[in-house]
Image 1: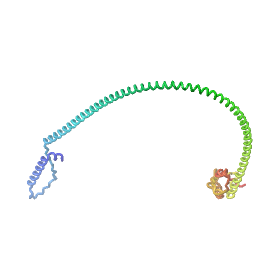
Image 2: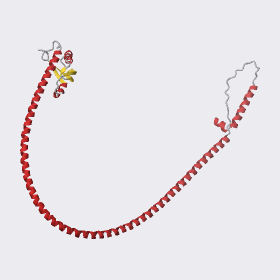
Image 3: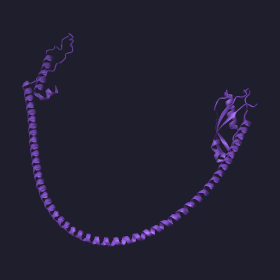
Image 4: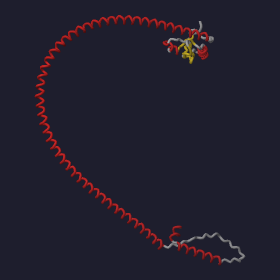
Length: 310
């Protein structure tokens, strides 16, 4: 409706005036002094808009012409762009042809110059070869003379060296034999000494192992005895039943260690028995701990076996 109002303002104003006149006429035809009460029903006023079809067609025609003009301008612009692109490509093709012609001309010029250069180089090479050949012939003659003199001198030196070499070999052979005998004597002495050292080392190792075994047994007895003293054995533990406990120790001072962990490896048959042996290990802290480096790592984790008292 707003589009029609914008395009046909006069028709809209005319329709509005007609409606106003009709409403005025209706108001005068009513008897306002009548005693009878008139019940007026609601009247819906229909607003009519007169549309001038000729103006609509003219507006459509105007818009169509504007659209056609835009289309024509687009076609014209497209045609101009096509002509410009065609001209650009022709200019590029012409420039490429000219550049190629210049390139070919320069290449031909370079080839001609290269040909002349090679001719000159070849001429100089032949002259140099002739000079070198002459120098080589002179050098060969001088070399042959020198070699003849050197050969005579070499033979004399070779004979002298041969005699000196023979004498050197004789002395070297005597020295080799002397050294071989000396090395054989030293090797025998070394063998005997090594056997003695090996025997001593074996004896020392055996003694050390016995000492370590004695120390291991001694500390194990001390640890088991100390734990046994702290163990409160539950009643009614059947004889012959063994309860193994794994103990983890950490050295805390010289000769003793703290208990880091103690847990039953295999149940003794009762949770009460299990706790009794674990508590015995904890209450025995600190435990004796070996000072020997060889046994310290070994005693960090031990397995103690608990048996009932006979």
